[in-house]
Length: 331
Ligand SMILES: [Cu+2]
Image (cartoon, rainbow, N blue to C red):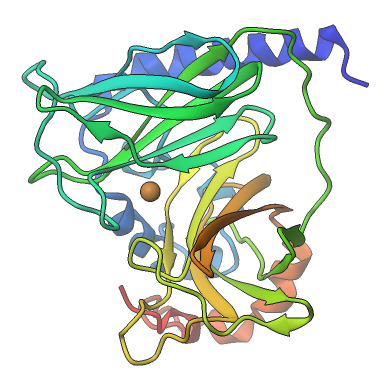
């Protein structure tokens, strides 16, 4: 089903992308922290309020400035560089991945802000989206991070999601090649209902380029809604969103937190996600129940038609882009 030809075409395409993005590297300047970029997404980036409220496809497809470049595409940004010591590996259950993050002074960073209870989140994704791990490496005093991961043969993308002390949040990405014969999965159709370990997780919501989309994930088990999800890293769920094609890493906000007096422990977990362009997206939800963290993987595309029906035109012609009905989630 997957010919060698498609695989090599894919690899050539990637080489082009990385050549270009790496070149941008240090030149693009401040990238701002992703949450801030998100908030802007609600506020319509273009001049025409209508364009943003309705998706602003044209404006969103081409970032107007560097601060809108999605995370994870670059190995170096704002003076911080991901130095992946493990650039290739043998397949196996517990392969050690080691890396440092070097700072503007060229030295490994040892001072991080805590985000979601950890200094650094490591996401490891097979390039065809058939493998996903979200793990938390250990750091030694010299700033070297390490963690065992489960790797099948193939091409993987490694993302480090962290905030250096006193700085803005960053997601740096690098490639990891795992030896062996490489099969690539065919493109998956839209997936909004996922079975994992006896749980059924469904995803409702529509991704709209340039706007914060409300995504509602609902967890049930044996046809019963799960109403006792457990906090995991300070939330009832963690959602990672990656763009098909280049694996741009998109930041996603949970709506509410355990203990805030309004956020229920399931069955629904709500997120807001702003996608930069039309296209396909892979979303991974980590949730915890009965002491076990599980991952549900979804695949969906932006939808122009759903967008039209979700945002009736008259409502958004006020010219005031600061206070949409759907922006009550407040950041
Ligand atoms: Cu994490």
